[in-house]
Image (cartoon, rainbow, N blue to C red; front, side, top):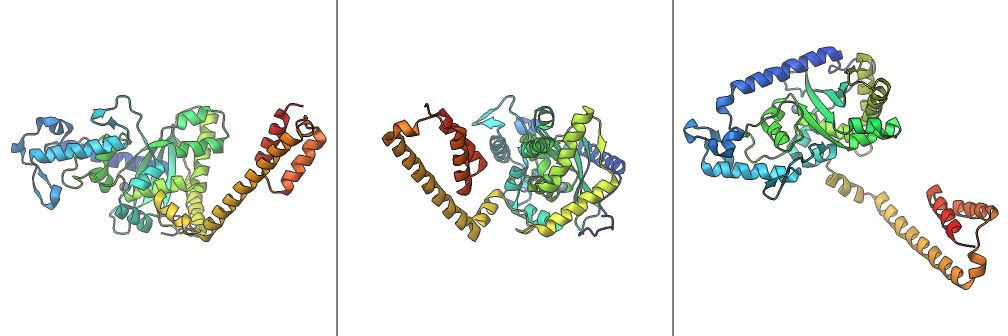
Length: 375
Ligand SMILES: [Zn+2]
């Protein structure tokens, strides 16, 4: 839904209210999950303790039928594939002390195309509403046919402490945190019944873990994230708007050195919605969420990409010619060339290189090379 200036988005609510709502939902989910234990194909069952007399069903192979011993083998193979993909298993051996987490762009890249299409079509508003020690509570709009008015996504940025402490500007620290690994959670049914298990075994689950294999909804363990999480990850990787929020996270963290929860006011939330809307209108390449591979193909199809490639080739040829000419001079006119450059010569070289369109960095490199030549 589009945000009109001055009209408050329906997703915006006071942070405390949103937190209370999220707590209630996640707690209700946990209670229900515990109540369903007899219908769960648990980690113990997967390890070989499953008793076929329990009569659990699966949809593996396309029909609804009782779980067999062969199914358990197939399920375990699917689990191992996921663990290998996310560095939790090497060959057949689980990796001890494997770091957890996943990159935001990986979530988009590994998402199922239909989830990605739903995220592009149905989820337009995301609002960070609080941060606590690098765990950001984000609300999103729900789709028009949903029976709730918003969903709650939690993202834990694993590099938060690290970038808070290291000597970078707040914006650079924010960018690095967003480009680093994270864990996530969503309160929706898709995440709960399809993907929380995958997130748990891949070690990028935030919130309650799930050890129940999704034998009915997702027995082949396809996809990775619901439409809400995909939109959140696309926003995190898209830059500007979320960068500014993350920058404030770092500023607050450095100022207070506290892991107390910081809430985003209703006014700030509305401002965030409007910035996102502005960015959406200005998006040159459309607002459909794309994988890295799709973006690359799109870039390569553009005429400007072709021109850039030509220019790159041409300037590489120029640089090679300059190098060859310099080498020749160094040999034929050794006495003249291999003298320490005076500051007048430096200025002349700088001016000449500037005129030819070399960057500051290239000029600095040339000057230091000149200085290194013994007189
Ligand atoms: Zn969701």
